[in-house]
Length: 169
Length: 104
Image 1 (spheres, chains in turn purple, orange):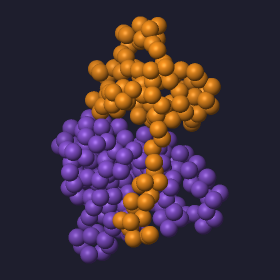
Image 2 (tube, one colour):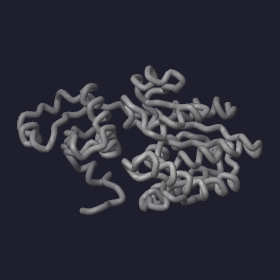
Image 3 (cartoon, chains in turn orange, purple):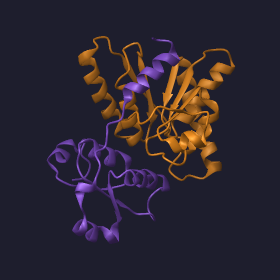
Image 4 (cartoon, rainbow over the protein chains, first blue to last red):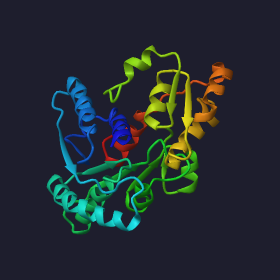
C-alpha cells in the first residue's frame, strides 16, 4: 500500500540488474501501487534493457486496527493465495517492508523452506516511520526473517538482532 | 484536488508546506528542501505517525503543531531555525544486500 510501495521502490532504486526478475506482490484493495511500480519499472527499463518484472495481487491480510483474532483468519485466507503464488515464483530473495501483505508471503516462503522446496533469504526493512516501535508485521517478522533492518538507532537498541544502516529510503 | 498521481510539481513551486504527519508527505517535502510545518492530530492518527513527526521535530527538521495551534505557529514561526534534511542512502542498502545475497 501507498507509503510502503514508495519506500520499497526507493530501496530497489540502487539495486543492480542481478536482482531480476522482480515479482511485486500487493493487496487486491490497493489502487495506487500498480501505477507507481510500473512507472518505476519503466524508468528502469530505460537504463537496463532486459528488465523484467511481474505484478500479483493477493487479498489484503489485515485492515488498519483490525482485531488480532480476525487478523489471523484474514491472514490465513490470504495464504490460500500467497502459498501457491510463492510456490510458483520460488523466489531466491523475499524483500518486504511492512504492509500486512508481507506476512502471508513470508510465512509461505518459510513453509517452502521447511518443506525443502525452496530456500529464500527473507529480508525485512522496517518503515522509516517506525522510530520507537515496530509495526505488527515487524514484531512478527523480527523472529522469522533472516535480516531485519531498522532505520533509527532507538530501534536497533530495542531489537539487538536488527541491522542498522541509517536512513536508506 | 482529490488524488493526484504526484504532488511533485506543486511541491516544486511551494515556499512552505503544511502537511499531516504522513511519512510520504513529510519526506517528500523535506527532500525537496521545503520548510515544513507538520500538523498532528493525536486523536485521529495511528500513534506511529506521531513517532516520525516527533523525531523530525527533535532533529530540527520540521515545525510541529496541531490543528488548534496552526495559526499561531504560522504567525510566529522562524523558518531559519530548520535544519536541512539529508537524503536517505539506498546505496547502503544495495551494498548490504549484495553482501547478503552473495553478489560482490
